[in-house]
Length: 510
Image 1: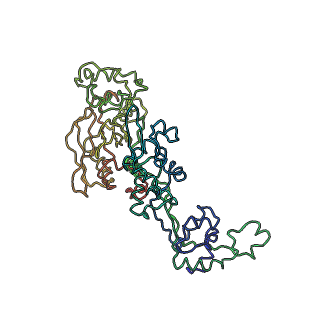
Image 2: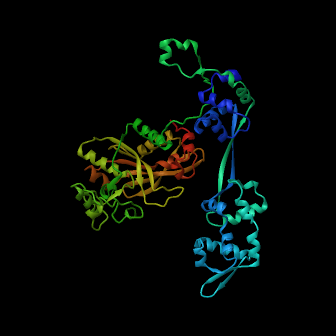
Image 3: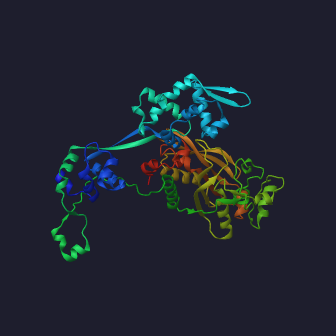
């Protein structure tokens, strides 16, 4: 676009700034001579920069500036000269020097400086007494390097100091409140050939209206006016709109897989009693998972109300009840079962929904799933989180078996990008048989363990549903399923909320 064409598109702030532009002009000077606010000038320069009319160059320099004491010493002189003047004809004590107008802090500073220059003698009797030396008399008559430096106009650019001046600066910087180092930014304008043409022709802009008003339309005055043209091709800053976190997108995708297979989503509180979270699942009360090192217990409220039929669970734990099991033996504690905790797995939801089958809220066969947060009191590292998501599922069907379990998991993992699954024998307190679930990662060409599964034991199903019926169950680590897809090796990176990462992360499968 030609300079003449660009002139017709300039914003009012650009038109006001342009006549004052010249090669290498400082931003601060431009603000002063234009009469505009600094933010208005900066906007004008940024817009002209987008048009490739100029560049804004920023140079950071280190300068010396006067501190609180420095302003006073620049006017009245350094305190060591006053110190020497007071003891020139008579030795004085610290108390006497204080009465002469020197502060205790200044006196202590002067002693170090003057002793270093051999300008003062210190005698200690009952008190310290200071007297001037011959070197001190010479020093008193000369202008020191520090005094010469203070006589300069501040701020002083550090890069422009001579060796003697830098030595004096270092001495004064070591002393409290005289000088301080500061970093200042200097912005200058460098005009391009296009910018030089715009400046040269800025007087030709004339009277241009920036907008069409109702009054112009009413009176017809718009016919005699020139209007600013708009350049729709100009580069504008990229604006990043709000978007879902990539982990949330993955969670929603997983939910859609189970919903498409006819599953119903399970919902429940993240705070659960030990009764629902562990006891109904036939986890013994002396199991390591119930200890503080694995579980976050809730301090207030400490206990929850548990169902009236808790005795069924008690009997199963103590003697197996009518399940054909011998139970765990010992004495089951209602108090321990009522303790509140942050759920350690979402299998507690599965127990609650099996109870809903018994109460008639749902009918068999039924399929339920959950993708929800669980909490484990574990040390945080690259492969462990203390707060993570679990993919939970159960199928209650009199005809269900392990083949069906593998079929559901294979369908799910296939849609998650894994080509095959395998099941190995495992152990969980609430399933028998129990299996570990591995998936084949086609990128790494290796098997990865991603969860556990099995068929609920009679001690769980008969207690919760009232009859012994096959219940397929699985619990999968959601973060471990998706971490490789996003290119991470560390699980913690999934929740590293850096804006650049969130804006540029690739989209999920769907």
